[in-house]
Every structure is written in C-alpha cells, then in structure tokens.
Image (tube, rainbow, N blue to C red):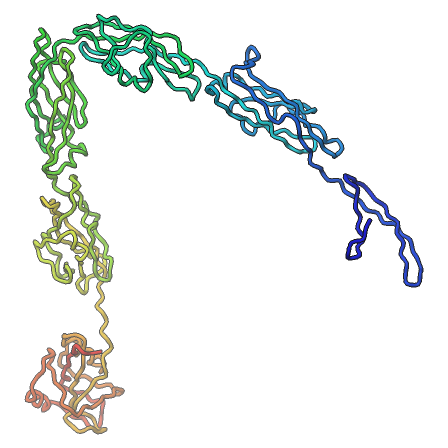
Amino acid sequence: MSLDKHGNLVFHPASNFSGDVTVTYQVVDSHGAKATATATFTVDPVNDPGVFSGDTSGDVQEDVKVQGNATKTVFTTGVLNVADPDVGEDHFVENHNVRAVHDPYGGSLSIGKAGDWTYSVPNANIQTLGEGETAVVTYRVKSAGGDTQDISITITGTNDAPTISHALVKRTNEDTDLSFRKGYFGFHDVDSSDKLSEVTITSVPDASHGQLLLNGHAVSNGQSIAATDINHLVFHPASNFNGDVHFDYKVSDGHVDSGVQTATLHVTAVNDVAVVTQTPSHLSEHATVSQTGVTTAGMLSIHDPDAGEEKFVAQTGLVGKYGTLDIDEHGSWSYRYNPGHTSIMGLKANQHVDEVIAVTTEDGTQFDIHIQINGDNDKPTVTLVSPVAENGINQHQFSESDFGYQDADNDDLDHITITSLPDATLGTLKLNGHDVTQGQDISRSDLAHLVFENAIGVHNHQTASFSFTANDGHVDSDPATMTVALHHAMPAPPPPPPAPMVSADEPMQDAPVESVTLESLASNQEAHPGAQAYLDQLGITEPQHQMGDQAIPQDIDLILNPDSAPVLDEHGIPVDDVSVAAADEHHHHEDDDPTKHFHDPLDHSDWSDHHS
C-alpha cells in the first residue's frame, strides 16, 4: 500500500497474484476519536502470454529419407516448448492434423501435448521442384493458454533425370532437307523449372542415306548440340534416296542425360515436279446466279515427264474462303460461291477478293487455283419505319436516320432526291427555310436542316407523304415513300391589339360620332385579320366584313384623333380623300340614341410591322 502525490491510497498486488486481499484500517477525527474497519480487494486473474522456444522450423528434401511402402513420404520432426506463468497453461493442445497456414503440397503436421511435432509430405507431390529449388510451408500450433506459434518447413528439390516422352519421327520428300525444332526430340522433365539444355547425337545416320548438318557442317557421333542451336540442325538426304533413315540421340536438362532414343525419318520418293499453269480467272460479284450459286469454270494444263502422272486427283467440294471447287483428273474445274457472302456483298466497284484453293496432281504436287472475285456497286436500299411522328410544334425536323438508308457495300449516304412533294394542303418541305422543289437533291449534311411544316387546319391522324430516292454516290435506290403523322396545327394567337385611334368628321364632343375611321398598327401585312381584330374589339362579329347593320356596344370608349388618319378599304388598301368624302355622305347620324344601328360599314385598318 502507498500514498500517491494526490493523497490517494494505492494497493499494489504482488506479481502474478490473483485473489482476495483484506485490509484493516482506522480513522481518527480531530478530537482523537478512533474507529476501525476492514476493506476487501479482489484481484482478478489475467492471461499471461506464453513464451515459446525450441524448434519452430524444419527441413525436408525431395527423394531424401523417403519412408513407407504406399505413401512414400519425406518427413522432419522437432520439439517446441512454451513457458507460461498461468497455472496449467505450460503445454500444448494435442492435434494430429494441424491446420496449414500455407501448404500447396498436401503435407500434414501433428503436435503432442509436450510440444513434440512431426511434418510429412508425399514425395511424389514435391517432384516438380528442381535442383536446389525451395518452397516453404507453414503451420500454426496452439498452447493450452490459447497462444499460437507458427512452424515453418522448408522443402528443397532435387534434380530428376529428364525423359524422352516420344521418339522423333518425321517425314520429308526425296531431295528435300528436313529442319529440326526443339519440340521434335520429346524432352520431358518433372522438374517444372528444368528445360531442354542440349541434344547429344550418339550415332549418326548411314552416309548413303544422308547426313545431319549443323550450320552446314556434318555432325559427328557423340556431338552435343545446344538447345539454342537446334533450329540450325537439318537432315540432308542423299540425292535421289528414299526410304527410312535412323539415328540415336539423348537429351539433357543441364544436370543429367536421359536414356538413348532412336529417331526415324521417312524419306518419301517423289517424281519430277509437275508443271501446272492456269489461265487467269475472274468472276463478277453480280455474275449470273445458278441454282447452286454464282459459278465460273476453267482449265488447268499440266506437264509431267513421269509416265501416267500427267493428271490431277479428281475432287469435289474443295472448300475455299468464299466458295467450293470441283476438279476432274483432266484439270477441268468449276467454282461456285454464295452470292450472299458478306465479304463479297461488301465489295465496292473496283474492289476485289482473291479465292485460293489448292488442288493436287497425281504425283502429289499441289497447285493453288487463283480466282479473282470483282466487286460491283450495290444499289442502296431504304427501309422506313413509317410513319414518322412530328417532333416539334406543327413540324418534323428530319435526321439522316429517318430515311432508313442501307448499303451492302457500306457506302455512306451521299444525298437524297425528292421525287414527289407532299400535298400542299397538308404541309410543305423546307430546306434552310426555303421550299423544296420536286427533283431537288439534298446532301447528307443538309438533311438535318430539312423540315416538314404543317399547313394550317390539318387534323390529328392525318398523314402527309412524299417520295424520294437515296444515293450512295454512284446510284440511286428504288423510290421510297416517307409518311409523316400530322398533329393539329393551331395558328399562333394574334398579339393584343393596341387601343384604337379614331378620327371623325366632327369636332370632339360628347355628342355621338357620325362616322368612325379605324387606324391600327399591326405585326403583319394581312389586312383582313388586322381589321377584323378591331371589329371584334368593337363587338362587330359578322364575318368576312360583309355589309350589314352593326350595333355599337354602349360601353366602348373611342379616342378621337383630330388628325387625318389613313383610311383602308376592305382589302386593307389605303383609299384617297375623295373616296372617303363620298363614303361620309352615306354615314347616318343618330344624336339621341347610341343604340341605333349604323347602316354603313366601318372602314378597315391594317397592322403595320412596327406594332409592339
């Protein structure tokens, strides 16, 4: 027990002690009175980590200390210790199949209570390790107190002798050299890191059959050839020799040689090479089509001094890249291809593809028949999804995709030609704001500026159509019809009219006005709609500005303009003063009753462009 600097009483348990502690203490007040009491402290136990020592690693080696008749394993052992101050925790949890942290070789580790452990692994599982190559496996064991320790085992490989998986057997023609490759010699090694190092020729071929040459020099018995030089090794048969040739060899992985193997070379007898010629053959993409496809034919000539060999091997259905070929023994051949082949249909004018099909003469000579298939320009086609819907207010803005252009030659669209126009009562085609004419060509780049505009008054569910052809830069497509589904075209509402200005043939006064001339400003040049707007403002609703009695509503306020206002006729055309004066003679004045009718029409006004 001790007091800290703050006057606190501190209890310090003994090292590794756990359990109850009783303390008796006495308190004294300022007058000397005393009292005694007892305090009890409980010290809880905690786990103390174990300290490991001993064998935390081991080693095994491929093919060394192999045991067992069936499993044939290699193994290593060790003893691991643990020191733990906690009672009953100074030993290990016994486990005969400790779980591996990492072991790709299928080994196993067991540990006893006293820490004695054994690791074993099947010898066959570690054969892929080469000479001196190592791998580390890891297992984790646990003490009784729950503490863990890793045990690491290092596996070291040894060299395995290579083998020859298959004997070398190759074929060459009479008077024809045979070149060798590394893969011909059948090298095999279970050590995954070992590669073919060299080939040793233990006995060379009979000189009367031919000889092995390395970089043009004869190979001798017992000569080793590095793997990197094997591509320069050839067998040169003796002139006119045919038959089997033998030589012996062995392979090495750089550490040890394999056993000896015998190579066999078959030298095939050949006659004098036949000389074959072909007349050039051409075939058009759009040639005449038979029931079996597009066909062409030709004749091969052959010259062979060997008796009985001046002919071909008759064959049918020889498959080429684009079609098939038949040939008889006399060299007469026919070729056919499917005209729908995409590679041929995609040919443009002045393009071609070459078909090459090999045929064989009686003596085994192969000859390639060459057929040139020439492309033609394919007429473009148009596939429309009809009708197109309007994509704007009372209009359709066209795009290239609307015209359904397709071309088997993969030619781009060059232009369209408008062969017939839509009914003008339904709408018009415009390009950059100008009316399109029949027969007009519209380039691909301008299609985005082509617009169909509704006529006023069309109804929903009506359709308008026009005809066109599409051109790939060479030829037009067949005519196609574009159909546009229309939506009702509402005219734009007129702008609010300005307050009318009037002039009278009488001074401004409260008395009724004898005659009124309307003057207005308008945003268009159409006289009738402008004048009718003012008549509508006055409540004069009779259409088409016909003559008739019209009552002036009592609640209309008219502003008198003492200036002379222009007077327009019913067509919106200004008239002279004489006509106005003559018209005034027909105006009737009713002083007392504003509900009286005027029997002459009001003059009409026009809206000018500066109306706001």
